[in-house]
Length: 480
Image (cartoon, rainbow, N blue to C red; front, side):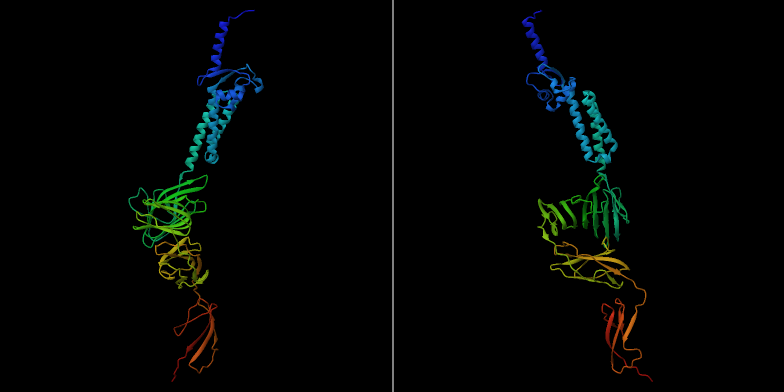
C-alpha cells in the first residue's frame, strides 16, 4: 500500500475544492453533489433557475435524477446553458407577440421562418447542443422581430376618403397645390388634403369604414391623419376644423374615439358616434348626440354627454354643458305622401325656446344626399326650389339661443309625382240638362285628390278622397 503524505492530501483537497466551489461569471463549473443536495438546488445556485435541472442531466449524460447521488461529479457549462435557454424563451415571446399582431395573415412567410428556427432551437437544446441552439434561437428572434415590423407596417397603412356627394362650389387642395381646385364627385382625399365649401354649398366625405363627414356651407377642414388597420379592419382619423360647420356620423366598424377633431386652441377627446361642431371667429360650438365628448380650453375641461352642448368662446373656458332642445314633431305632409311638384310647404310643431330651425331635405329615402339645408325662423317653411319628380326625405332640428343644434326629428319620406295626364272629373249634381231658376246652385262631384279644382276662378276645397261639394252663384245670360 502506498501512503500519501497528509500535507499532500490537504493541498490536493484545497485545490479540488477551489475548482468545485469557485465560479467565475461565464465559466464552466464542476460540482460534487453533497448529501441532501438536490438537482433543483444546484440548478438554482449555478443557473439561477431551479427548473433548468434537466439540462444538467443532459450535459452529463444522465437519464434520471436518481442517477445523481452524493459524490457525483457534475459538469455545468453555465454560460452556454443560460444563453441557450434565454434565447429560446425570448424567441418564444416575440413569436407570440407577432402572432397577436396578426403575423399569420400579414407576414405569413416571415412568421413561419421564425417558428421553424424556434422549433429547431428547442430540439438542439434537448440534445444539449447549447451553442447551436443559441444560434438558431437568435435567428428566430430576428425573424420574429421582422414579422412584427411587417405587421405594424400593415396596421398603420395610409388610407383615403372620397367626396361621395356635393352641391354648389366644393374645392380641395393637396399639400403640393398652390391654388384651390374643384373637387368633383368621387374625388379621392388623402392625409394632408384640405376641403372647403363656399356659400350655398355642401359636401359629404365618406371614409373607407363608412364614416360620414358632412361639411356645411362656408366651411374648411384639413385631413390630418387617416390610417387603417388591415387585420382589424379599423380606421383611425383626425380632422382639423379650420372654420365652418360639420356633422360626423361614425360607420358601423369604427369605435368611438377612432375619429378625432383637432383645433389649435381647443383639445378634445371624442368618444361619440354622432355629433356636430361649428366654428367661427368668435366661438366653437359642440352638440353631442351619442356618447360623450371631453373639451378642454383655457385650462378647464367639461364632459359633454348625450344630447348636450357647450360653447367655447375664443381663448376662454368651455361653458357648462346644457341640454339641447328636443326633437321637433313633423306635421305635414304625412309620411309617404304623394305630392304634386307644385307642393312647396313643410310644417312641424314649434319647440319651446327655439330661436330657429334647421331644415334638411335630401334626395332619396335615407337623407344621404342632402339637396336643401335651410335655417328658418318659423315652424314651417316654403321650399326654396321646385323639386322634380322623385323620392325625397326631410327632417328638422331645433336651434337654441346659443346656436346649438338639437337632435333631428324622425325623417319623413315624400313622393313628388309629376302627373302629365289630365285628372278625371265626375259631376253628380246638377244633373245633365237640368234647368235652374235660383241664383245659386250646388255642385257635387269627385276628382283626383291631388287636383286643384276651381269654378269661376274660385278654388274648390277637396276631401281626402277627392269628393267635393260647392255652392256657386249663377250669372244671368241675356239673349236677343
